[in-house]
Length: 420
Ligand code: SF4
Image 1 (cartoon, rainbow, N blue to C red):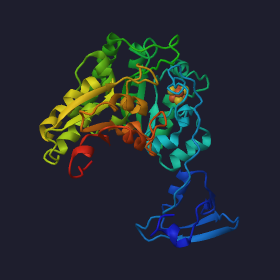
Image 2 (image 1 turned 60 degrees about the vertical axis):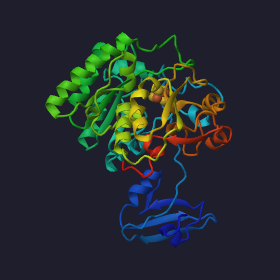
Image 3 (image 1 turned 180 degrees about the horizontal axis):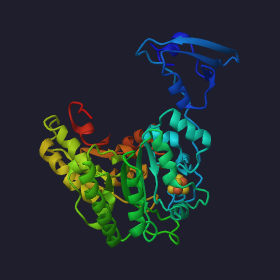
Image 4 (image 1 turned 135 degrees about the horizontal axis):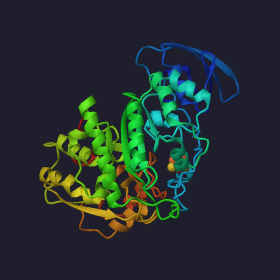
């Protein structure tokens, strides 16, 4: 229980079961957050002793409740996509990586993409009541037959009417299309973009992301797109984006950085991405980093003469020189991009965020020439564990140089904090 909070004042003990707010039973963190948003409410709780007790709470504005809830039970996915990342996980990884989650609550809270194929009527009502917006939705295709085929779920509801129902209740969406060559590209991509655009302004953005496979994926059923196919998809994306810029003043439809990379096409300028709303999804990530580095200009310490290793996956590595160029000028340091193959998932998994601790250890343990190594902060979870359960502190203890976890370089190298 956090001190200086209502929870501490009431003497709520760890292990207390929160049962209801204003007589509404609590299902999860969403109920708790939304039902306790008022200034006054009644909480029914069961203490660790088994005693049930009601608290009449009046909360002065700004005073936090200070209650840490247990993590929610994640909703399991009802689909069986051929390209499923979870099915592509080898054995020996963090247990959580084997969970196929498809949870609208995490979509709202953390921006995880969900397919909305496992919603019960009760969930739909809740999304509307609590205004869970924006939601991040994996659409992939709007043709119901193609979508069901992609999701390997004959029960998947039609996505366009579903989104329309939500939109009518004030819900907005960021959407993604994972591009599977020969299935949802070409005319299907056109149709999907047209249908999403037809839903109007509630669809805030669409990203087109080339399917990422691992050595363990079902290669007999799904393959990665060729450069030619990526260029073809970009032509469609650009045509839609150009049209939407004219009609709405912003592009709306974006190719993932990886799509440009695989197509061999230069990335658009930073301004194209607006607020970089899908940067966590690899859309505009390079331009975002460049923007962050520029924002910290003049605030970097003196790193002159230092050698700094920048560790990343094979997807970002070719793009990194353009990212660190300005950084070298700002800091006086010499940067070396260290591109890592994913020794656990296989070389086809190119994202920095999925690199295991063992890959960093192997790349750095003999690098006494480096003064500092910057590791992608996305590669660890909240407990500082890499994908293979290696702890970041354990890794640091086994390396000859200092390591820092970094999202955007400025967070690791600037002397003062840089506003987001
Ligand atoms: S929606 Fe598809 S890719 Fe996502 S977890 Fe489910 S089966 Fe895997």
